[in-house]
Amino acid sequence: MRALPEGLDEARLCDVWILVRADGARLGFTDHDRDLVVDGVTCRADGGWSPGAGESAVGYAPGQGAALGVLDDAGITRADIEAGLYDGARVAGLKVDWSAPTRLVRLWTATIAAVRREGEAFKATLAGPAADLERVAGRTFTRLCDARLGDARCGITPPAGARCDKRWTTCVEAFGNGDNFRGFPMAPGEDFLTLYPVEGERNDGGRR
Image (cartoon, rainbow, N blue to C red):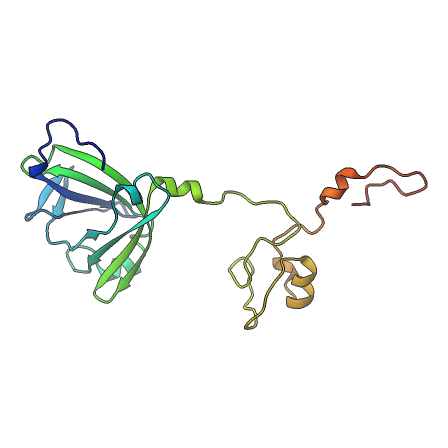
């Protein structure tokens, strides 16, 4: 738990969550017994928002947390979720003095990595800033394919039980999917570094 600034009375603190959607709309929720206006946002006491993650889960650790809530016409609606307005939305968790809502401390920030309906409720997966450190950026140049059999980059629906060893010959001969091969089969191997010109042979760079 982050240390609270001097002057904040824990007895008067409540939790507030402010969410900024993809379209710029700002929504607020609180576990206080009445609505609060925080940072210009009316934070609803009856919004049904109940994060199941603390600072260690979504603030600065790579892990992900979760948030649960109820779908309603005044807050988070089924139509808005289906329209993708919450995909990538930003969420901030705060501690607020309910008697003076301008007195607050921000505990963590996160983005909504995924959201899905569960009956009349929703479940959102929250990813903290450090989760970006776990994402793979760029590609590795290798003779083997780096797609997963059957995924969008592979582009085919494999037969049940099929396996792929990521080699070019397997992709072409077993699956007829050479156009979607995601490796570099003509890349020189490590043995290329040890080659040297040999008298009497064609030294034109063709040996790998």
